[in-house]
Each structure stands twice: as structure tokens, then as C-alpha cells.
Image (cartoon, rainbow over all chains, first blue to last red; front, side):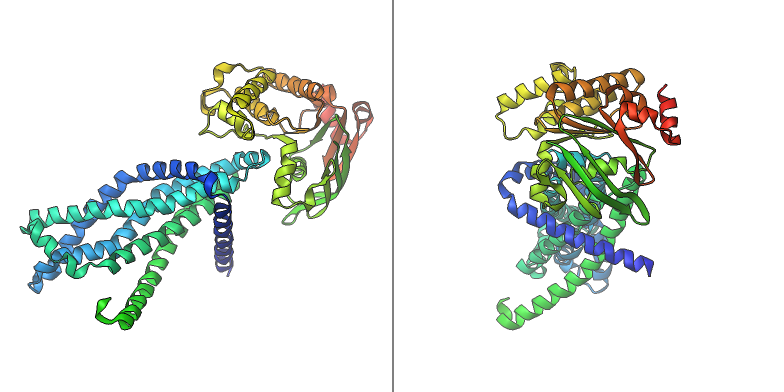
Length: 263
Length: 240
């Protein structure tokens, strides 16, 4: 019971905190932009190499697994399409958000937590500046925007990686590989990937800034905040993955009924 | 220009930190708050600037009742107060100049620079440290920069939360002298939270001793010296 009570308390806290962040952001759109851009470049550059590295190998692994299955049904021609679709819809956003959570989420929680326990946040407030506006909003937006930008890079590298491995291991040339892509990948597939990525980005941003901003209890407290940030982010992402998949499938079915074959 | 603390109570969970505490700090006065660790000294300071909300009672800064202000009003009230924290609390990603100029965003760059240099001089630092980041300077210097940052927006009230914690005796003396000099020179109302009775005896106008969530004694230095309470005697022995 204690765990459930704590969990619900944290969930409520995160909801209220993200509302405050959004409210503060909307009230100060102009003044925050330079800080946001600084954070986007910082978060993006910090994670780009990891995302590209992981993206390449995720694409490669998927190609190997799909080939194992498809070769049994003599359907290797669909390898490129299936692999690209799976990358965009599911694996890409998921892997990138896990990487973002591990690298940027943990860093943000630790950075804000340290600022909290060393009274830097109180000092900012005492100097008449709203710390949510100055510290949290730029990081929050930067994480969400970066998750979308990194998705693009990660997916491109993943697709290239998959294509190279398909050529190297299974003698499937690039044209063959790409020919089945339009059959499995359309605008809706891309929308699914972007939507999921945005949702996961919001989760990483909310949990990491909330846990860091509300850290207490010195160095130990910062460590606790970072650990909890990692646990909550991964749990919420997995949970959100299930529900976004169900929701998007339902929405796809609905639009298909509405517009028929045109959708 | 005075600070008044009326029947303030504050508890964290089961622990009562302040229980019906009332006192007033007069204009231009230096009040030292002494007490053992965990007796609510820092909580008292944070309540004055509205960083903590009391469970009961009212805090006023001049004409403003801090406890009844919303976040926007509090932001205005805080501009009148300068608070020096236990840690230097400087922003590591900013240079010394940017840290000191943090509260001067309404000024033009030239005016801000002039004010920053003026404040650094007040704390006996020169321009050579302007472009250095906090981790690149000593802890004592960081404390001075923190003090300069507090002074930059010209506060009417100065609040010091154990300003000499973690400093060697020479720097401690220098910082204490600085507090006295600044309070007198700038004619601001100051509240200093400290464990250091020796320093309090030297520079305070009045001393307040907190114990078990209540005021154990409050008065001028001479009155405190004559108080026979064991805690005060222990503090006095330490000072000698």
C-alpha cells in the first residue's frame, strides 16, 4: 500500500509540475527562446553520437531477425519494407527514448538536483527570477524537441545500417531493399513514429526535471533522484508504448472506415 | 524598513521547528540568530524571504506581509532582500561576471558592468576574476562573489545564512568584518544566522538565541552576556 501511495503521490506531483512548466513557458515564449536553443544544441550534440551508433546496430539487428523469419516463407523481398516500418513505428522511438532517458534524463536530474541541494535554485528565486522559467522550461522543451530531431537522425542511420547489413549478409542490393518500403511505410507510419517520439520525449522531460527540481537531502538525495528518474522514465515509456500503439491502431481503423481506401 | 516576525510556527512532519516565534528587526540593525543545529535558524531566514511558508503567523518586510503574497508579489519582495546562503550557490555554468550581474537584467550592459565591478570592490575582489567560472576560484572567493551578487541589486535587507561555514579562521574574520562594514556603510537591515558567538559579540546590535523551537533569549550583547541559561553560557565559553 505504501508503494502505491508513494507512486500516486509522485504521479500527481509530476502532473502538477508539468502543468506549471507549460504555464510558465506559454507566458514567456519570447524571453525563453535563446535559452531553449542553447539547451537544444547541448542536448542534441550530447546524444547524437550515441543515437547514431545505437541506430545503426538496431537497424542491423532487425534486418537479421526479419530475414530469419521471412526466408522461411520465401518473402525476403519484403525485408526492406518490414524493417523500415518496424524501425519508424516502434523500435526507433523506443530505443531513442531509452537512450535519451539514460543520457540526458539522468544528466538533467543530476544537474537540477545538485542545483537544488546547493541552494542555487533558492538563490535564483531570491534574485527575483523564476527558476522554473530560467532552468526548467529550456531543458524541458529542449528534451522534447531533441527527441524528435534525434529520431530523424537515428532512423536515417538505422535504415542505412539495415541496408548495408542486408547487402553484406544477404546480397540484397539497395534498390531491392528500398523497393518494398512504400508498400509498408506511408504517412501514417511516419506520424506514428513522430507521435510516439513526442510522447516519450515529454515523459523523459517531465520525469527528469521533476525529480531533479524536487531533490533533497544532499549528495545522497541527488543520487536517489537520478535512480528514481531512470526507473520511472523506463516504466512510463513502456507503459506509454503499449497505450500509444493501441490508440494509434484504433485511430488508424477509425480513419480507414471514415475515408475507406484513400487513407 | 524593519522586519517583523509574528507568532510564526513551522513544523516538518512531526518535528516542530518554530513554535510561536515573534521578534522584530529594526531599521539598520544587525541581528544575530544563534542556536544549535536544527533549531530553525535557517528556516527563520527562508521564511522571511518566502522560500518557506509558515504553518501559522505573519512575516512582514517593511509594509509588505510576505506570508500573504502570491508568487509574483513574493518576487517583488525578494528584490528588496539579499540573501547569502550557506553554500556560495553560484551558477557553475556562468562566469563570475554573469553571476554577479544575474539580478541586474533591467540595467544596460555598461551600467551592469560598472555595478558588478563596484560590488566586487566592496567585497575586496578585483576585475581579474570576472571571466573565471566558480569552480576555477577558491571557496573563500566564491563566498565573496556570492556576497557581491547579493549586493548588486542594492537590497534594503541583508540575510546571511551561516556565511562563514567551511571557511578558515582568517577568511571567516574577513567575511565577518565585511558583513559589519557593509551593513554600516550601506545602512541596510541585516539578519545573520550563525554558530559563531565570538563574531556575534563583536558585530551584532542584538542577539536572538533559538532553542527547542522557541526564543530562549533576545537582547543586546550585554544583556545576552548576563543571561545565565546553560546554552548561552556554553556559546559564550566557546567565544572566549
